[in-house]
Image: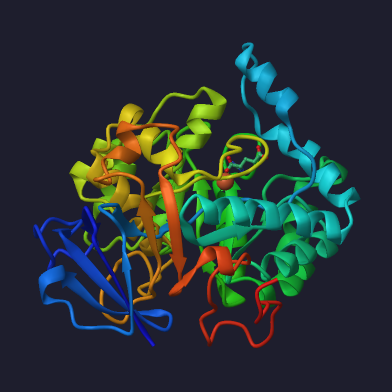
Length: 414
Ligand code: NIG
Ligand code: FE
């Protein structure tokens, strides 16, 4: 069964071999043929092969599905009062996380599952076809494992973030908490996660603690990623590069040496910028041109969480990234799609090319530039995830076959 999508105003493929030859590979009057969950053909409409079904998009533009490589979706409660206080002049501090930890520990599984489902649906409606989510609001062995178990029903990109902050009960015994994280907590969580992460910043974990935890995670088979440079400059970005982390996230504060390390030929670490966090904490914007001009690979993600960035909208992040972080519209779209895929070390998503997953977004706009040009406007008209329109598939996307031996990915739409 094949479906031909045509009648596009503009098709962004992220394949420089297509169309205008730019990194976005923009094809005017393009077409895509989908077979099952994969792209079977992509190119100029006039060369498209015939298909069993045809969909005319009436001049709408098409982009690859967004890849949100950084989110914290397993939590209970919300912190709008803290946001309001910040907007009245209070600074953001890592300590607010404790409020969400208390609410999350007190919540039953059903509450957490509903919260996840709501946010996963929001992401989908906004055009996200692949997303990552972290634990980090449980901070006990049972609560961290529970968060990851619940998250796996929605995505295979799960991250163990037991080292989000030191919980209150360990306030006077930091070493004891690090021992717990690298011992029984890691043992319970490693089978449920692909990634290990640490919040390496003021008020959270220092670089030596981060190194210990990431190395323990790596020894347990997890791949490292790191929160660093959100609140102040530090050695976290260099640590991420040194350990070959898939990404280092925030990078609000980065020295020239940090940028150089990320851009060096040997570096395999993506710099992930999180505009929602600067927006919601009224922090100084990092200048993306520093990273991009140096040659670093840059991703954009939502950082969706109840404290520092309660948005699930990649369109919003793109608009803000263009306006305030000095991405060009093309760079921002690439970073929110192919960049996110790079940050998750995925080569099956983020690009529309033959054999890749058929994940794409139909925009109510003649060009992807409208994502930044028309901020706040709901331009996402349709989302196709793994070849299926999402209205028929509320829990997110398809599962790669080989990652987890068992899991709660529902086979049937609910
Ligand atoms: O990525 N930086 C650490 N963690 C989150 C914030 C979590 C919170 O404030 O609840 C972030 O911004
Ligand atoms: Fe985060």
